[in-house]
Length: 389
Image (cartoon, rainbow, N blue to C red; front, side):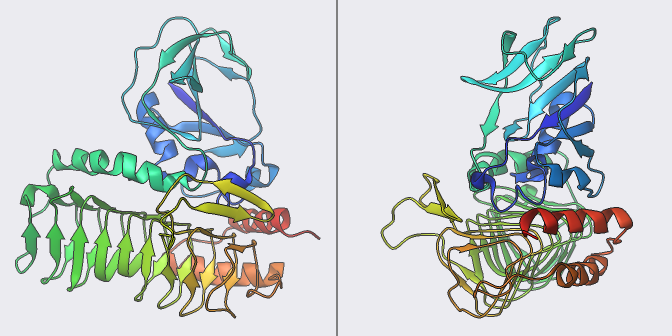
């Protein structure tokens, strides 16, 4: 059946990612939210409905077109992008229905011969298991909710033999290598969950993996302790990473602790960039975006780092720091807890559009991603939507 996804209204709660990508393209556990909905529908996404006009130029990998809400003819599912289903498809009735999770409507089932036009409040309910995200900070909560089961699914498929010279603590069957290249001297600790290394992952000696853990295709792991995290495709990581989500194409190639954090695409974290993820008071973390504050109800929360952001060496982020899209963070060892999009340093300056495009068009081909006219247009729209003229 056809699948359509509906993004929430723009809100500081989704900073810094809501300004640069549809919410459906965020990673909840090992998988994108879109991929979780596609498992429910048994098919690919046809369109993503976003109220943010700046995202209508979004193009990435094989992502569906992004545009305003439009009528949907059945058979189809319309799912909320801020809800991540578990992958268990319910029994759909012959009549149109709301997909519910507790008291929340999280989607709509549109059978053949009917049309969804944005309403459906009067439709009957079909319960759907999953997790409702209340903001970007809940990417860490979703990681805790999903990751153990996500990586356990891979165990049933099996994998390649563990190379000689590696150490396994726990059940060797919980180490799933799917075409990864692993040097001798790597430790796999699978006592708390399975460890999955996808195709073309390369791991250097001296790395310690602690499950549950998912490492996406083409990622290079250059040493250090990698624990309870989900790392998207084509990243380079090193140092200590714990309970964190990397959306993909990120670079953390040096020492430094990243904990309970979400790191966007095309981010470069300079050597010894460190995130604090626990307040000295052991209290809940509150986020600041501009003049607005959001209660996360989380005790552990590091940094939320937007797409294309960069940090200088030795940057120390306070607990609950939000780094805007395209920001270049330098000039202060301890930056403020909110860094606006396309900030140039921490003194209130803003990077110009040409500077941002120049850097992006240098970086993206380094990961074999062509900067086509469509990609350039997307980057221009990101900048124009965030920086007043």
